Image 1 (tube, rainbow, N blue to C red):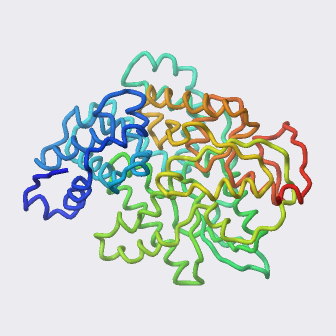
Image 2: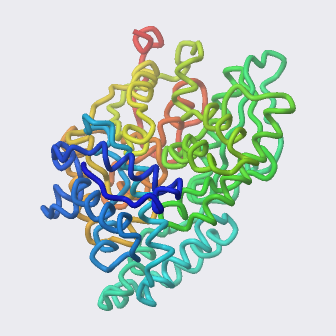
Length: 447
């Protein structure tokens, strides 16, 4: 795509990087077939190609963002299906991230929108605040229908509906320190505790720690580590996102430079995509660029890491049909597609792919709060496709997808690592309590 950036504009390294991305786009339109918002809304400006034009016009002129551009950029899920489809290698992720930061700096949103975004940025990345807010949300849930009648307040209604009826107790895994794997430890890893997941479903990281420990992997919860920064990063709040990124780089660098790390594991695929991008996010910071790149190089989804280990025969293989939902941040953001399916099959489960698996479920961080109508359409489409394959369990690797899909189906939605922990000797996942599954012979599961 031809561009007309001025030499002055290109002196800004972020703009120069975006200009290079835009020039790679050949306007072929392949991305439109896999873009959830274009498929749902049918508007060219709600496709990656259309958004690239809007961003090009905005950045070329250096003008503040306008309402039209903000509307269509806000509707983007950052699912990155377009990057999987694109034959020209357009890095849409970095372009839309730059556009959002530009919007945050130059556009004054309506008061209601500013307040809701400010609330999300001030609460979600902080586990204690988030836990308190969920307790308050349970009390306020009856007011959701009233809030729905006032368009600017619909995100609050969506927030109340998504809040769980019960908040699990905080996990002992949240404490800093090392989880010993005994004298047979063969690897040492850090694991991201993060923010929202540790409040909504602490059983996920508990399952990961148990499974890794049985496999001889020592797990460390690094002091000073917290939110990965993804939640604020995707709202264009770059200063906040980079603060979180730097804190994590500091925390993990201390471990790398101390006893060393074989990997930095992430059990939330949305966070994994961001941590793997720290090298890019902090490339212009001389104090962090090298260490951030080292952290990104060590980052792995938990299933990526597990697939490199010699797993034993499953101790508790069960005869259950599992629909594997590949989160967008997993399949498009990290390009991790084979490992989760292979591990589930190795554990004895019958794994079925979901039709239209490339399309987003509509969670996308805070998208199901900020764009509830589009999100609900995508959720219902995803759930219908899942139910078409008649699974007994849904497995996925992202807490946002678990919450989104679980809000619209009676089929239990469980994290992939919980099923693996169960099959390889751990307890049955709590969401499967009361459900019985026939046991498989160990040899049959291995085959």
